[in-house]
Length: 170
Image (cartoon, rainbow, N blue to C red; front, side, top):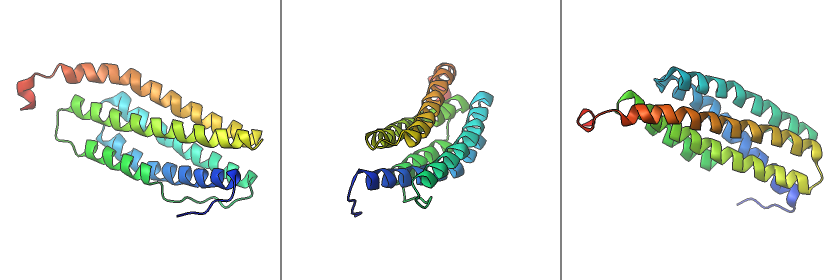
C-alpha cells in the first residue's frame, strides 16, 4: 500500500493511475476497432485511439510541469474494463448485438475516465495548479464528448440489435 503525505502526492498518484489507464487503452482500442462491425463504431474506436495518444502526451506535459517522472502505476480498474471489452470482442452474437456490447464496454471506460480526470482536476484546482487543472479539464471534456458520441451511435446500433428476431439468436 502506498504512503502519501499530502494532496500533491495524491494528485501524482492519480496521474500515474491515469497514465496506466491510457496506456492500456492504446493496446485495447485497436482490438475493439477490429472487432467492430458497424463502420461508424470502427471509425470511432480508431479516432479514440488517436485521441488517447494525445491524452498520454498531455499527461507527459503535466508530469513535466510537476517535475515528476512520467510513468504509470497499474490501473486495476482499467484492467477490469479492458477485460470486459475483451469479452465483448469474443462474444458469439449477431453483429449488431456484438456492436452493442462493444459500445457498452467503451462507455464504461469513458465513464471511468471522466470520473478519474475530474478527480485529478479537483486535486489540481485545490492545489492552485491552474495550468495542470486546465490540461486535465481539456481531457475530461474530450472523454465526455466521446461518451456522447457513443450514446448517439448506440441508439442506432441498439435498434439494429433489437430488430434481430429471438429465434435468430437461438
